[in-house]
Length: 485
Ligand code: BGP
Image (tube, rainbow, N blue to C red; front, side, top):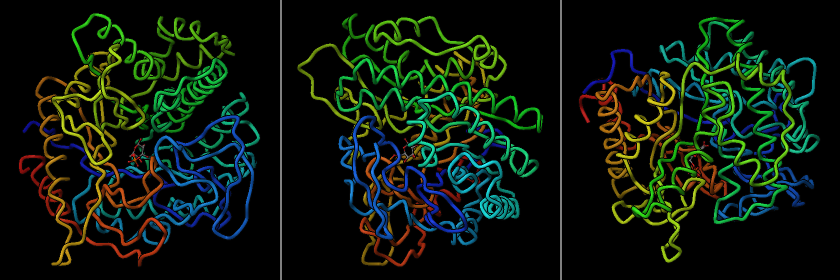
């Protein structure tokens, strides 16, 4: 195996999917308290309900396309797995597996409850300081996502989901606060989780987006690109040692047939879903095909010369991405459709599919790594990868998740091949290293962890943590630096 000596083996999470404690220590409401992470739809008013009985109206609904919980039902993220109160126990378990890196995110509304306060909430800052110190106690390097789906609800409502330039400054203030506060404790940062998901959502489940939706999506992305680039500059000024990355939802896409029309369609999918964001964040300017995408949907972007300057001077230090599956596309309409992680495509006859119809494709990971390294020549990290499955506690009281081990093993082998082919891969944090609330389904029962958490979809359970078989397996993988799979 070819893993570099200081390879960052670890696990990944997001605040909204693990922390719970949604209404303590001055935290404001986040949009993910009332919906699942990826479920924002504009122009649709719904009533939502909090566990403490309050109700509210807004434009947020869980994604019906992914079978998420419906408005008015129980929202698991409000309590999640209560990492807020279990962090010491959980980090100890990560340390036992030998983690070198732990990816987590910061709940924006814990720091700025509505996004607009001048001063941060001290209790929120203190919580993350304690978490970072705990990680360092075990020599685990934190990798921090500044924004992972959970923008303050008040801000989202007021500015309509990044529909206003003002949010750039609110984000920059938030990022600056974090860079200053955690200088020396955190060196690795990601500006936005799966930034390209905005575009991908628009087409999910075969949805035909209107010009208005495109206008909103591309404008939102533009403001996020500027915010990200500003954060990169601020982060470097505050600490030149900071390594700041983009985070792309990485799906390898193939043409289903050799029909040139499929080849072309596939290329356009890469451009629209993958390159568009990566190019702006890594190269500091919009690719030429961006104009084609905008013109097609009559998008008129609010972009200034100053924005262009900021983008140019705020390119990221590393390319990071999530990878779960590949997708196949075709112009031939007679093919069966499958919907996976934010993407809908044709069934690939060469691949097996998970219980959620996500195509299991380790070669796709190698392909993706090599393609993106060639495009950007930046250090890379895979900051999410894993298998969501329904785990069962067996008669012996244990969780024998050999299917998960198999999935991870094959993806690690693919990483090894990519490294041998020259890719500068620095880290691998598996998704949901401890069971957490699934973003797409809003459920606990879709589990990814090495650590089982006793909690069900209705919020019942003791929150007890248990090691699955994969726990010991991953410990050996890390200990042997990937030799023992
Ligand atoms: C990614 C998100 C994560 C996560 C993961 C798994 O897109 O960044 O937040 O949840 O997907 O998805 P799911 O929970 O739907 O299985």
